[in-house]
Image 1 (cartoon, rainbow, N blue to C red):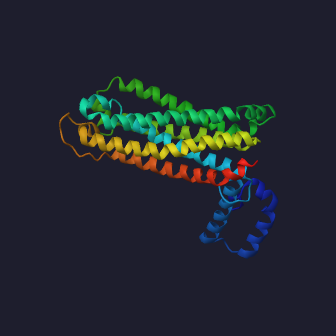
Image 2: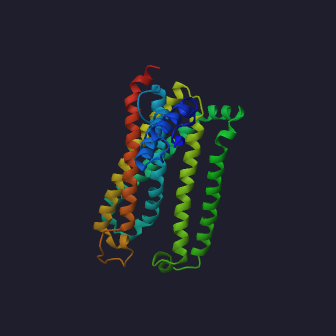
Image 3: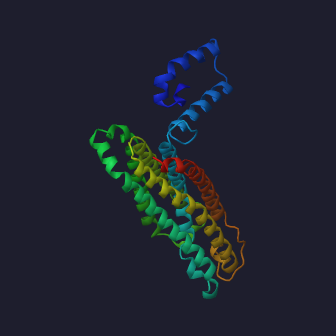
Length: 303
């Protein structure tokens, strides 16, 4: 139960908490409610220690925690974003020229903001790169080795699955690839899981590495500014995806359903619905990080 608490907290208070738990239980096994109370308290300490909750840490740590939250949200957003890119592939070839304006504007807005977010993440990485290199030279590799190894393994597995799908797809027709649920579709599901795992493991490695860095106030301000850009962009991209869906449902519903041009199928696409739900969840998480950054920004500016 003590492992719910961060290692530094356990080193300082673990013995006292362990003794208190033993006194409270009086030799009886812990109930589910008791375990939950310990877990909730421990996770609260982890959130406070990471700067994600409370005001016990410095404004710099709070801004850093908010930026971490936005980074996690963007990592989650990339997964449905990739799904949307696949679903909308060649959309402009199935619609008449006069009906392209609204879906084109919404699609281009989403693509432009996605590119801006990718640039913002890269700029944030470049801002902390000198400090990270010093951390590695000073023997920091063991602290992040396990997470990096997992991320590399997920990347290699994803790459192998991608190659297998590409080779297999060449021997299948569009109908065989896009209908039913056979071995090819099962492999595609495995690819999606591995792709999500790659995004998650590299994000975890990046956050783990950054948490070990002693960042200056200027670097934290840069990270906070870029986090604001990303956090604001995600709900706008989600709205743009919804507008694109609505405009395509009106102008070319057959594209969403994969039916013959000119037909009138239902505009409700389950895959797009899932994509938008995940985008909305990621955007909400990003806004939580945004609020954390904004609330601490005025205090950080005085540093």
